[in-house]
Image (tube, rainbow, N blue to C red; front, side):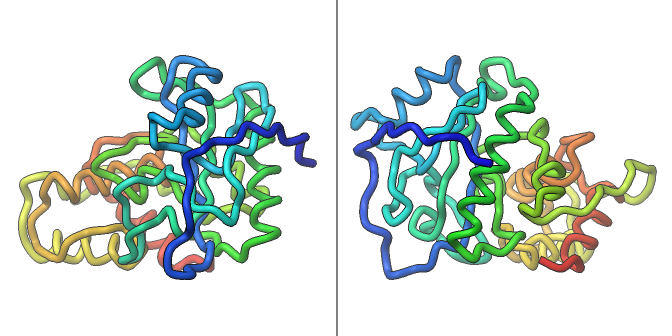
Amino acid sequence: MMTTLEERPSPNHGERAGGKPVDILLLHYTGMTSDESALKWLCDPQSAVSAHYFVFTDGRLAQLVAEDRRAWHAGLSSWAGEGDINSRSIGIEIANPGHRFGYRAFPDAQIDAVIALCGDILGRHPIPPRRVLAHSDVAPSRKEDPGELFPWHRLHEAGIGHWVPPDPIAAGPTLRRGDRGAAVAALGGRFREYGYQVEAGDDFDNALAAVVRAFQRHFRQERVDGTADPSTVSTLHRLIAAPG
């Protein structure tokens, strides 16, 4: 059951563009030193950032922007070939200091609140499981949130999001930054098939390494290193094949 929503209106929002449907649920961490400083920033007209919802460390919830409005949370981003993620998404900011200020596990009460809130949103919007995404998924070269400590498997157990148990890390053929060739081109194609923005080509460059890291933070959290080892690649293949 979802807890009571506090009203903390943010002025940072606008019209959703082009009549696009809401078909992405995007999860963030705040990446600031305290809950209140993050909430203040999201409600400051000078910041030009916001989200629809805010989840406090203790599990309290606040609504900042109405769901029919375009909150400013995704920034420059893309998924499945589509830009302007803000116009087609609902954004949730989850209080956590993030990698810069002492990244830590998300408390159970906070995750319980996230699950309840996501379930409530999904009851109003027909968002497919594989479009419940991390900020790092849609902006892999810029963002790390909500990061490798976020328990996506718990959300999936509650019927939220797309997930398969990651394959164990094991020795085997690995592609990494600087590699070139048909295997790299095929890898990029598979990431593109799932939804990540990957330019066509056969060069394992910094952009592809960032996509691999983003994928690992979401789906293979044991080791986040930007190298496409057998565990990462096989987990990607299984996700593509999985319903959702």
